Image 1 (cartoon, rainbow, N blue to C red):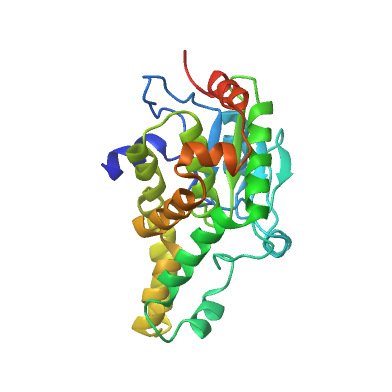
Image 2 (image 1 turned 45 degrees about the vertical axis):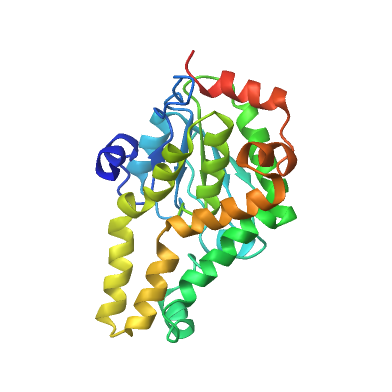
Length: 268
């Protein structure tokens, strides 16, 4: 399942991690998300010229950066020639810790092997409950609603392209009527597409004789897990009943917004 889906969704980016298409997914009405319209990824700071040229030719025209100010300052995005930069910080600091060095993480995570997993559960609660995050995701949809030309893609990303970006994708795909199993499959796809990046980071830890606890914790920080998404959905249920209601009540999207979004991003 994941290998086949990964081959359909992954972009051939060699100098960055977790770059993928959201085009091609089918909704419950039989419509498909258009290709060359919405991309998701990890950070753009490491992109080489060949990958920047590829993204430009692919149609990338808007870059939505969901990272905090300290992350942006440390690793500013490299942009394709015709891309406009939009800064939308979901958190005021990197709660996911995906921008921290392995040395910083090792110093913090030598104890309880479940600490990283528990931290991520808290992050996913905050992604839903935090009022600022709700406002940012509303602004994300405003950008999507303004991108009306076919073949012009909005790319959205954070540091690893899995948590802040992952929930943005969940909201977007829900708004287009994609079923929950497909949304979950796309969410978990990070563990397949970003595997080379994740494995390289863990191998570096092992080479430096990091403890088993540290490695277990950092694997939790670098990966996605069904329980992370379930925690977000649990908070959504507590606040709004279900994801569709949360789009209205939490993110303040109107029925007209959702209709326009489907006209822009779905095949007829």
